[in-house]
Image (cartoon, rainbow, N blue to C red; front, side, top):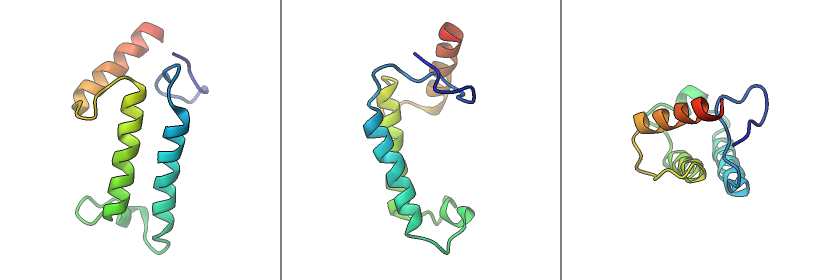
Amino acid sequence: MRRRSCTTTFLWPEGADEASITGTAQAILDVRARYPDASLADLYDPLTMPPDLRAAHRANDKAVLAAYGLRPDTPEDGIVKYLLQLCKIYG
């Protein structure tokens, strides 16, 4: 585990597929660029979020969870617990 910078909240796993995560993060930005007239509030309204943006975020979530060795169906409280345990161990 390593920290990427002094502003990184959680440790980043060694050996993570950074290219995959960079690609999925860029895909989010690319999709958002397709909606130049939409505000972030418009884009991220849970009721009206564009399906392609939601899919891009799901792909990014899946890649990040895989980097930590977590399953895509890990509940949010399980993710938080795991990340806090890492901070306690490697802090």
